[in-house]
Length: 120
Image 1 (spheres, rainbow, N blue to C red):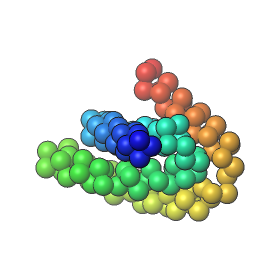
Image 2 (cartoon, one colour):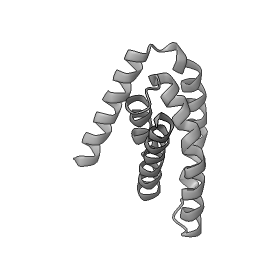
Image 3 (tube, rainbow, N blue to C red):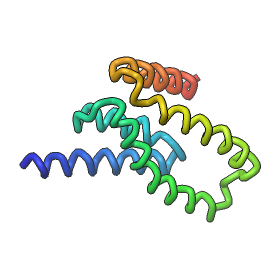
């Protein structure tokens, strides 16, 4: 029964985050990280690292669909990608050095700020 429960929870996290990513082009981490920590009891730093690997396949699928629909602006894509790769490298290097409680609070504040900016 425990394995079935785990499969249902993990599948629902994947389905919801994939849908949000496909619809909005982002947001996978905002669904996956809380899902992994709250429903599957992963530590915060492991949830962040795991979320990135989970996001990769559905981001590729969404990107292919956006590419076919000619919705991607490559002038912006390449310029932002350079900075994003540098930032991702630095963030990944320091992730497991940040205490779990602090990482959770930083993530929560980031999500709240993002939500407020989206609403107003």
